[in-house]
Amino acid sequence: MPYKDEDIDEIIEMALSDHTTFAQIEQLYGLKEKQVKQLMRTHLKRGSYEAWRRRVRTFSDRREHYK
Image 1: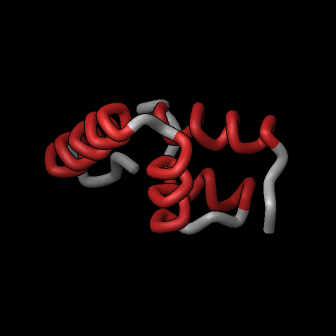
Image 2: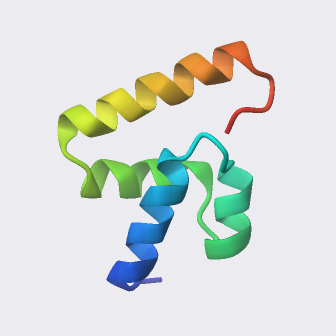
């Protein structure tokens, strides 16, 4: 399903937030975690995407229910 630019911006903002889980994004937009990661890879600069993935991975290791 193609998303509007506004929706993509909101999905990215939600994914970058430490307070929003992948489950919440899926509930609102129907995107699974893997799809969110792909969207982020497509729309962020490479360095920004890699920094985001490191942060998600680091926090996920520390907290049981991070994303």
